Image 1: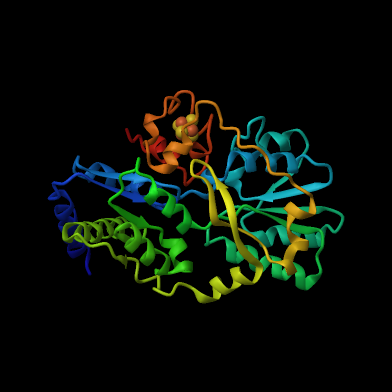
Image 2 (image 1 turned 180 degrees about the vertical axis):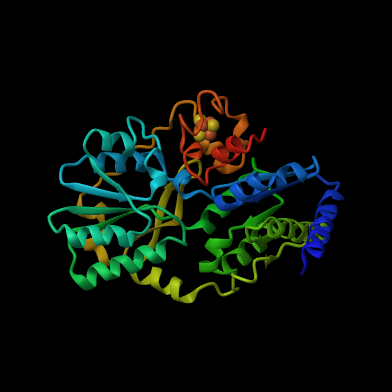
Length: 357
Ligand code: SF4
């Protein structure tokens, strides 16, 4: 398709969306979508009766406050080297952050991959290297492969603090909440590469919710919205894939099997959504030696919410970030009060950065 035809096609998608007259709320449940929608200005192109809500799509943001506090305390234990993705460094705990812990002398390092953490452990056998496993189904396979490699090498000074989350159980909580009006779901592109369409099929039927797995280009997102509107107009609730060039209905079976070899589902706490059955991952018995929670006897910390922060409400789609009284003053990306303003996938950061009101 040449550029002119592409522009015409995008215009036709917009026309279709703008012709919608009913009150409709669509939710995106992927932080990358949240940022892409904010950056492209798509929200401003929607008619006033069509709302785009952000959901629990940022893994850093949904990590429970008690788990954040546990991570920071672990980092400050003598002899621990904590390796994490950069987004976690400035997430506020109740007393501190990993960045502040590092300034006090804790050995906290930023990595792009769990394999970097494994390399640190391999090269420094006297360090106890803990990788902070935060992420959805997209991150879990890489972490699983890393743990398998550690096992093969017999690297016992490496472990993972698994705070991984599975997306579909959280969607069920959103759909079951009578206080949240969602008419359709813009489903995550990256997570769906791994999990495929099957989890959305049952959700679509059970809650009569149209679900469309969508890509990240402006055109993808508009096309995904049109596909949702077409279902809503017909009174249908199907799970469909817009992002067909990447996502297969069956997902990535190799990645699914890799996760299953190393982890099993377990209940987990989410910020804003509470405890959700089968939404976390803990180590299978043969990999327990690499489970930091077990190895360092990390207790369950109480979830003490950050005073005034409405991240929990934002993650449920009950409010948009500007409705938080702290948005913009004092909470900014330079001075974040909650994780949704820290993470590059956080809804508050997206709204602030792109001046969405
Ligand atoms: Fe929390 Fe800040 Fe977002 Fe308010 S604006 S919900 S304080 S991160």
